[in-house]
Amino acid sequence: MSTEQPIMEGPAPMPPDVAERFERIKQRPVVFDVQHLGRVFTSPQGEAIQAIGDLSFQIRRREFITVIGPSGCGKSTLIRIIAGLEKATSGQMLLDGQPVTGPGADRCMVFQSYTLFPWLSVKKNVMFGLEQAGHSPTGAANEAMQWIEMVGLGDFAEHYPHQLSGGMKQRVAIARALANKPRVLLMDEPFGALDPQTRCTMQKYLLQIWQNVDVTIIFITHDMDEAIYLADRVMVLGRNPGHLKTMVEVPLPRPRHPDQLVDPLFVQTKKYIDDLIHPPGEEEDKPLPIYRMTEVGDDVF
Ligand SMILES: Nc1ncnc2c1ncn2[C@@H]1O[C@H](COP(=O)(O)OP(=O)(O)OP(=O)(O)O)[C@@H](O)[C@H]1O
Image 1 (spheres, rainbow, N blue to C red):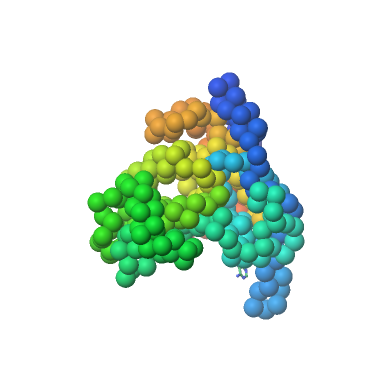
Image 2 (cartoon, rainbow, N blue to C red; image 1 turned 60 degrees about the horizontal axis):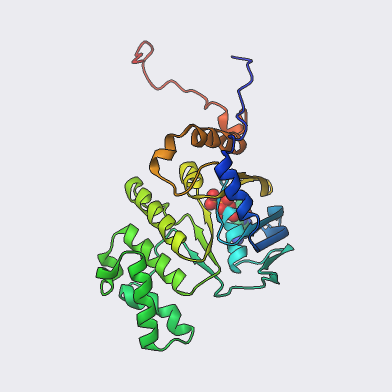
């Protein structure tokens, strides 16, 4: 067995034009201020499960933040607390300086599973929240159509969810969320169920939409390429209990382009984040016990 230490990559260098962009971002107002957030669950046996330990971070207006970390580090718990669907057991969270105490129209969520009403057309799905918020049917229809056009589905407004592909359904879900004009769009692995090609197309659409809408995005993903490609900053979480390992400023200029996936800065950033999430030598790296299931001598390698 080799006794050599694996080489841990440092963060990639920041080109001057991207560093300037981050300086400009730091001048923007803080939208989200999360202070010492913690969440303890109780197991069915009555044991305390500390899902999130002590998490503090700030997000500025119109930042695109992706959240990545190993399974069980508290990504979903965090986004559910931000959405107001779950309560923190310690700490607090301010949105535009005001404490968040429950769900609100200022935060909208897009989930991985398709959550459209199957009995409503695309247009009616997008109108639903608007009508609930007090828009007249005509006003809601006009507003809904603007958002449906924005996600490129103008020709599908009268279609029903079962007539749409997975990517189209998620575009409707994004239109429905944005129609409420939230301050923050929360996305919990929204493209996780899509095939790789559709996923790439959706990433491109989302970046275009985000460019044209005044919204801050917090986006959970398991996919490292997706996390880096979309984000201004990648929030890397660790587990037991969930904690912030680091916030990585992505050293790539915007607008993003798929060619950047092979840029040395991208590759170095990926290696850096991967080393943070899976430190070499951790349990997951241990080899499996090997049981021989073939005849001795049946060596195909
Ligand atoms: N309702 C609950 N009751 C008890 N424990 C919970 C509950 N929800 C989450 N947990 C625990 O909190 C921890 C964090 O869970 P969470 O689902 O937030 O992690 P995650 O990072 O989103 O995981 P994954 O990547 O697998 O989706 C886990 O140990 C999980 O078992």
